[in-house]
Image 1 (cartoon, rainbow, N blue to C red):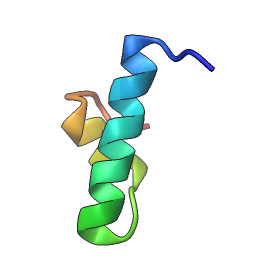
Image 2: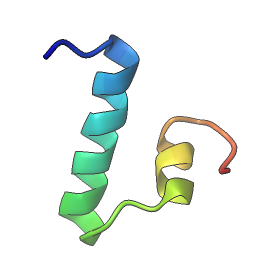
Image 3: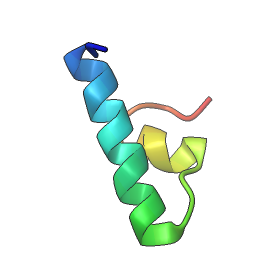
Image 4: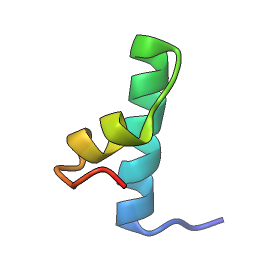
Length: 38
């Protein structure tokens, strides 16, 4: 399966947050991606 660069970035951030906090909230993901949370 081939992922786009943006999907790869998204997955890396989720993986990193899960390792650091045992979870990845949408707010944390948005913050790391410099986006507004949904």
